[in-house]
Length: 131
Image (cartoon, rainbow, N blue to C red; front, top):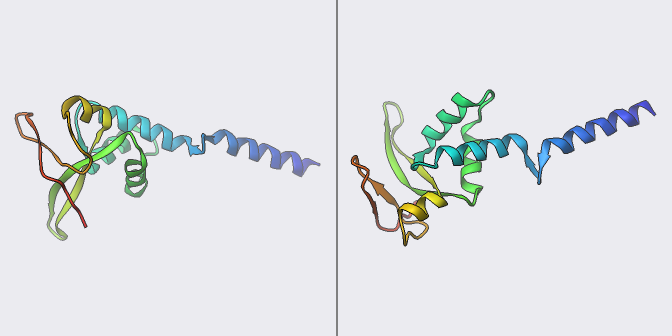
């Protein structure tokens, strides 16, 4: 009888941990990302740095990539080039919220890069196709 109660307590704790089928940590990460992206697009490295510096346990780059790519309120708006000493050059995705894109880029179509120059001027580039 005691083992049955113990199992029941574990099941309740697990159920409480999930909200609508999502882990509460992931929900908090999503909310924090959307707030961070509210004023302008950011790249994956900036988002990872922000999450890991403001949350006690942070996240991994793999979990962050999953959250960014699966959240329908967050869209990929382009790429930036990064260069490393050992790895050469590579691309990092730029992300924005749909609300930011709708407010700042009327007529934007998903897959079209958004270009922001040093002065903050926004233009839309040609269709981006990444392999």
